[in-house]
Image 1: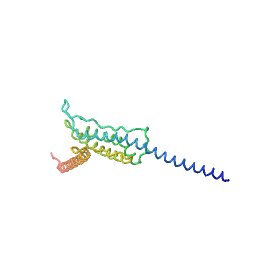
Image 2: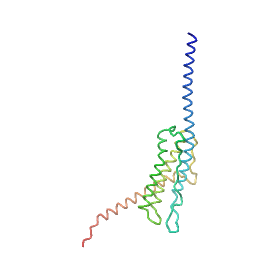
Image 3: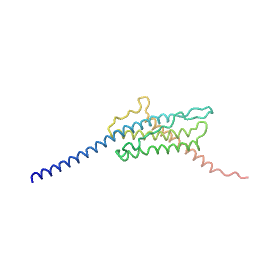
Length: 204
């Protein structure tokens, strides 16, 4: 009877130890997957951010026809695919990162529409305004997501800019400046429209 009791106790202890080890192993694996994913994705987000900052300073260069053409290409965001475990991240962070390519795609559609229907040669001012506005916003989001990933896995904070140039401040100011320009433009257009609507038709 005593041997059977010890045998049963051994089975129970073994089961509990296996359960604890299995739980610890899964938790450790999740941390390793999180760390690897965070390193890979922060590199891409930071690269996107840096290239977007360059774009937001681009007002084009004159070509042989006198038109201003972009001198800085659109920044690209290359996220890893199914080879990594995206589900190891908190859901809100995972969702926001995976939605970034769609946000970029929608921004490009807006920019292309403005270039086609509103921007005028040779400066294409509203086109460059749209490029800078859309990608300044996306760059700020990319930096925010990079910071969140770093905190999740305890990566060191990234030093953005220096005493001579502060990219985050530059982008935030860019967004505010363009929003003010657009608000002033809309107000001006509204006043002109009201004035025109108040004119009496010329009678024969």
